[in-house]
Image (cartoon, rainbow, N blue to C red; front, side, top):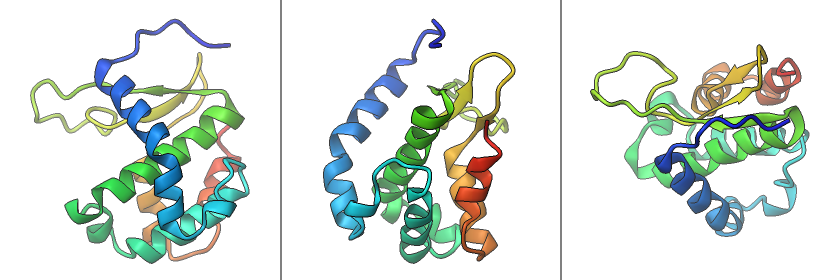
Length: 142
């Protein structure tokens, strides 16, 4: 069930840009055929992210911003499609918020459901060094 929460204009623009850019983004990963929005495809996403941004610093490097934004969107879309989550965004009006949910897109299930910040999930996968982190974390997101 979709809730009626208003959608932020920034988020609407970001989601549209990411969806329209997905074919090019996925082709650039070299794994387009594996990125089918299934939960199992998170292993391919994790491998691509680790290859392209093998450190926390690389993940946050502006030179990789477009790639990382595509990975954030892809991960969140898998949650939206398979765990009934919705995209959310709270703008950082002061530019100084320490709240991790402010100033970055995240996904949240309705009611008392789970939420996740895809950027931080990708960061956990990069820092872990273990294979299957995204799949494992996705499995508990229900």
